[in-house]
Amino acid sequence: MYNSIGDYMNGILVVNKPIGISSHDCVNIVRRALKTKKVGHSGTLDVEASGVLVLGINKGTKLLNYLNQDDKAYTFTVRFGIKTDTLDHTGKILEAKPVAQLNDFDTVLETFLGSYEQIPPAFSAVKVKGKKLYEYARDNKDIPEVPPRILNIYDLKRISEPIYHENSIDIKLQVHASKGLYVRKLAEDIAMKFHTVAHTISIHRTRAGDYTIDDAIPLNTVSASVELITLASALRSIPSYTVPNHQRFAVTNGQKLKIDSEESQLKMLDEHGKLLAVYEKAETVYRAKNVFV
Image 1 (cartoon, helix red, strand yellow):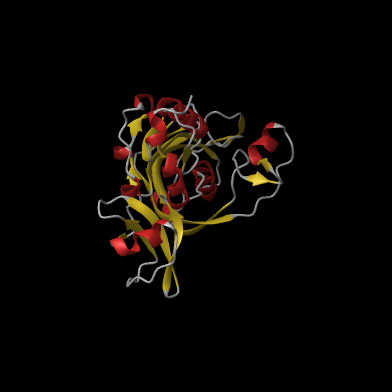
Image 2 (cartoon, one colour; image 1 turned 45 degrees about the horizontal axis):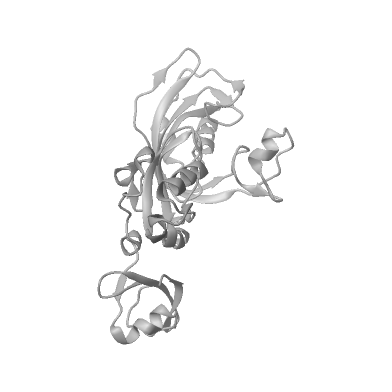
């Protein structure tokens, strides 16, 4: 089933994940479309969230260890005054705290900038004792304690005027943060500053690392003729080193090299711009991290 042209496609594919399917569903859809088993993603996106999902195809899966460390950006709409068990609009309402106004809202958002401590929500894929938190929650079992994560929020701002309902307020926000942010939990933490509760009614990832929504294609347009981002182009933030002929054997066999460079990482390219390997600096030499040929 998986032995056609897909086996010869190597690179990165950026898709716009629609609402209502999981990141793993997207992987399976792309596997079928490209007729290859080797597809992975660089960071889970909630079922009820949409937006940028970066996929590695065949040898491109080796790049995901680099890409899943990237920061992310989202737009999201928060409904203040109502809490659900999932912290999004799909959950069961647990609490309502009617809210009339949110004073000094923009000033409060600024307090989240910089280092931010976040405890993952109960409905999340974080594993404790071999079981995901949402599995405990769905089985109505006690949720194990999870240590907080230290994240960085680089930007957080309001991008709409408040929309007032009888007992709640909707506000659209934009956030840029380090990897691992749960937007639903951020919404709840913002609400706590106003002594109220909240949940998200929409989440859209607009950027993952170097890739934005402008790079993404609709999932339903993926086919065997899709043009992938090449392995060499995918690692945009890693400096390049063109391997001379006398070093090619050493690079393709993962041997250490002495190179006159101060960069912590180098992507090793042949004379045609093809990615041969990624090397990392270790004291006075560079050592192979991944070899692609």
